Length: 107
Length: 121
Image (cartoon, rainbow over all chains, first blue to last red; front, side):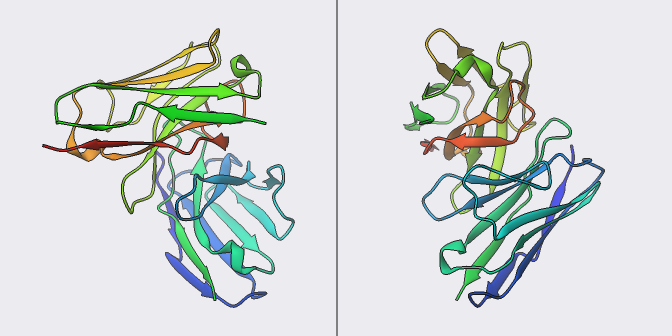
């Protein structure tokens, strides 16, 4: 099973201050990694798939990068509504594991 | 509009069985793989099970393997999760989710709101 680790575990930022979230895989997942946003009481929302592709309707301030074992989700100019937990997930190998999440608070 | 609506969650005792159902609408259901993902109270996301568009490929997380069975009915746009020998640690909100593709590789672009399963003595 591929293990995903995310850092930092929590991130507190001011609006407009660039956010950089990291996801590292225990072995290469090529580009087969996605990012989700989950707000309290809501289902997860896919933001990025296959490392770099924005899902339908996702604002342009969200971008993904990386390949192999190291991936990054960047929120270029966060807004207060971006306060949420962000999870990465790999689809390279079954089971399609999730990372533990990064909690982002926009002050 | 894609809609996924889960049902069947309830409170049960350890060792009992439960079947979850997900009704899909707003898309060509038999073109997509499907998943069950759960979230224990205050915890992260855990992939439970997945099934390809034609049921040829199914898979389970280690924590449920041998106890849970996923299936689908493409004529009725339904997804099921049969949960047997339930344990206290199966307590969670169970989400139904649509895969990006016809396979069941894992990334999901549409999710239901979840159905709560509580296992307690």
